Length: 466
Ligand SMILES: Cc1cc2nc3c(=O)[nH]c(=O)nc-3n(C[C@H](O)[C@H](O)[C@H](O)COP(=O)(O)OP(=O)(O)OC[C@H]3O[C@@H](n4cnc5c(N)ncnc54)[C@H](O)[C@@H]3O)c2cc1C
Image (spheres, rainbow, N blue to C red):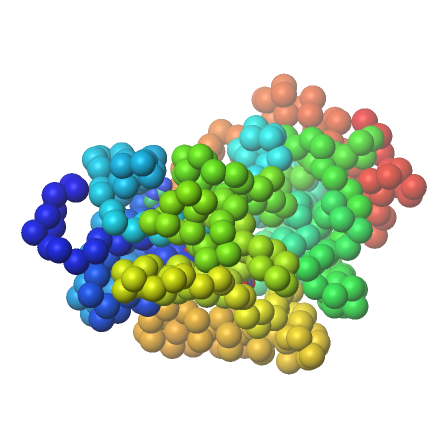
């Protein structure tokens, strides 16, 4: 693989990762006298900010992903390779791929981040996180399967477990997921079941800090909580979850039974970062120099969520605009080196943050302008549509959204993947599963509280120790 273009004397730049950072780096090399190879283990660029819409059936995967080959097809100096990078040998200027080797003159590592379960990797099976299309489809499967199971379940206590949805982590993704889950019960599925009222679902958002959306100003955090509560989400703060299994979440002596638990609490840099053998921060992100290069080698740059970038204004956040800017900056610095010039430090232009909560509900912090409710939601919508890669996608998604907004429908409500039909409730009520009976007895303790009661995690009110 390293000899593919051995005759070409132009500097060879390899971009590892076709996310926001990698893509904006590739575009910056347009018309430059260099040869660029984009390597990604997926054949598409994924617009992660709208993944929660796929997870909750508002959008289809193809609405938020587009083939890298198609995005870059007009850029003649770029080739795209589908490959999984396993190692980086900076001493030999080459990438070790699952299926071979790829040499470079300059490398941009832009492999992003993944979920972190703070060392409790066993929680992943019971509380999936949201990072890839596969994650989104798995979450969608669990959400809609829970409603089907509730329809089959004759026992009210057990049915309540199926209709309790817990989101761990009150950052933007957790808030978006919780808001969307509440809307599914209150609107989308409100009239679709005979044996229960979907409006009775319980959605609980659990956050370890003393407020949700900690990167936003406090007044917007409070407004977000009010908007969440107005659509029926219970928000629990200052609570670090210390136990998760397939039936419940617990913290200290507090426990809440639920069949659908979603994880939105932590991120860690992608694994390949550790192959660079340079200092990393607590989340595994590579500590880069101010020009985004690695210490001791000027041929490797790191950009996006995998990089720990500290500027004069502090640490650059792990958000899409920062990844785009850093990817472009790394590419510009490489071109400076190719021309024999000095590299320059990265400066982040913070354009503000917006978190959406649900239909016409959001909070926006755009520097001097802070607002919430419908104006924030409309701004969020416009920005996300604008940044969706590809005109066809944008138009289609906008039309789909307008339709969902008017009708409350979520068109992608397919339960895909393999189901364990044997584990679904017995509609006759005669469950043969002794484990289920045993767990059920335990779990009913916490779900028998009405949704108006707060199962206080600190045991102040209505707490049920186990
Ligand atoms: C659910 C969710 C919602 C979000 N919402 C927002 C939002 O509203 N606003 C916002 O600004 N940001 C949001 N973000 C954050 C934003 O998406 C990230 O900051 C951004 O995607 C980072 O870009 P990146 O290029 O660094 O990494 P990514 O976009 O993650 O891209 C990394 C790429 O590297 C590839 N890759 C990784 N490892 C390998 C390997 N070993 N070999 C080959 N290829 C590899 C991956 O396949 C991927 O294509 C959200 C993130 C998530 C997960």
